[in-house]
Length: 256
Image (cartoon, rainbow, N blue to C red; front, side, top):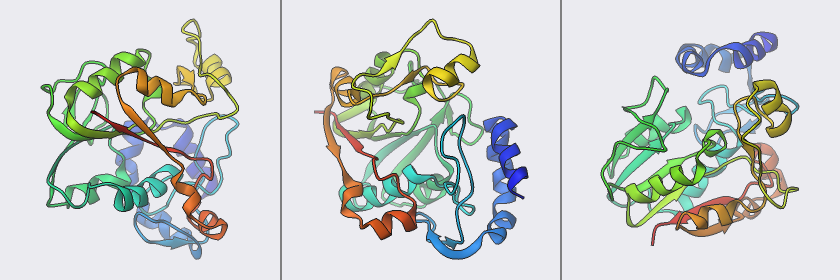
């Protein structure tokens, strides 16, 4: 089973993998029955999570067999509940590159008008490019977009598009993978070969490796940025059980 999962994650294109996951997640969940780890999104427990990742990254014990959440989804789900108005106020929400752990749950919320968008995803409502979105100015109260900016060659253009479609006082969550050992983000537009990109940026389709200056890059686009070390509120036991990334910082971007 482990070999099959690794093959699917490595070689199946993401749009097809999304469709397959809708069929396979329940039988795979049975294979992982147990109570050593717990998903904060779907509330299910397992003996461990599934492997997930590229290159030399630590791939083990990451992906929820039931709802397909990763570390970032499980932490963000709790953050959204405890520190935002997403579940309590009437809001227009745009979810770019919508993630399966969230879609059905967000669609069930009666207080929000929920729209999903992506350039390629088969499960998105609207097909659009984050660098040139097909939405009017000041259309949304909330913008959610996780682990996308590291794929985008025109980062600042995309960030300014996000700010354009947000209403005044609106907010965005724009998480990316960050190497905090880097003082500055590493990027080189001349690196185009997938193997070279994996070597330099950690994944074959990444165009940069973000460093500790990520907050400054968000501010450059005009956002007020709150760096929230939210994971530190959890005990070491909880971090291990939920399989959070203990170094994850949540970047809350306010459109003032």
